Length: 233
Image (cartoon, rainbow, N blue to C red):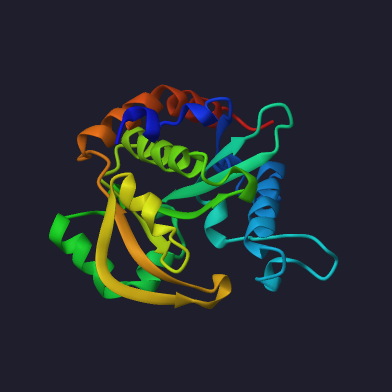
């Protein structure tokens, strides 16, 4: 797989942003950028009514997760309109009040910690890799995952873990971009009508072509992270 395929030119015009709620404002209301992300995720997951719980009775789309307030959110915006067309979150494991991965794959996650001598501060937990239907198949998912791996390197994290759905082929993009199965265990997730498997990535130990693509992403992600670290107004 070539670098051209991994860090796709077809989505170079998309604007990449990173957001995280400032610890100085941790008791404030949900910031506007997070409301925008939650609305976007809810609309895409709602999927024309196939998952009705993501649309409120008054017609609003919403997908709010406890981890939202503790995570870094990587998003892509369309040129011109500025609309969100894709997003993923990655949270420092030690900051999570509740880890979906640990709760869902207790024995497996324990074994990974023991085998690799990990501390919580070595791990980023990822979730909600979402791309608008009109932008699927154009490399946006790849761009988000590569940016996430670059973020892990910048934060000096040894491992990224998360879950991938298997019924609709979501796992393929993870496996193509340096992730691998943590085990064979499957967990049903009724909220999204899918079965999930645990996936992991070692950001400091990537295959050659993946490492090259992540290196290409580093400057963009570093600049976005610098903007994220500026005080909220």
